[in-house]
Image (tube, rainbow, N blue to C red):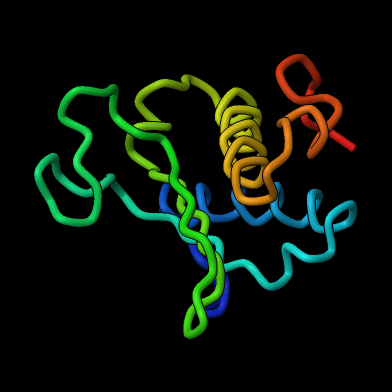
Length: 127
C-alpha cells in the first residue's frame, strides 16, 4: 500500500501534460518570451463545423495557436487524443509533442521551426 500522498497511478492525461510541460520548459530557456504564452492540452480538437475552427476538409489537427489580444495572452494548444493515436511509445510521443509545440511556437513567432529548435525534424528532442 502506498501512503495517501503518493498516487498509485498517474492518468494518461497527466503524463501527456508532463510531456507538454517538459517541451515548453526546454523552449523557454531559448525563448524567454514564451513565459507569456498559455500552453493548454485539450483531449480533442473542436468538431468540424464548430465556430472555433472547422477542419472538415483537412486532417485532424494536432495543435493550434491563437495570437494574443488586448485581453488574452497568446495560446498554444496540443490535442492529446490525436497525438496518442499516432504514437506507440512514451519516447515517440515526447518527440512528437515537442515537434508539434515547436511548429506552433514557430507560427506564433513568425519563424521557421528550425529557428525555434535547430534539432526540429531530426533530433532526439533531448537537451
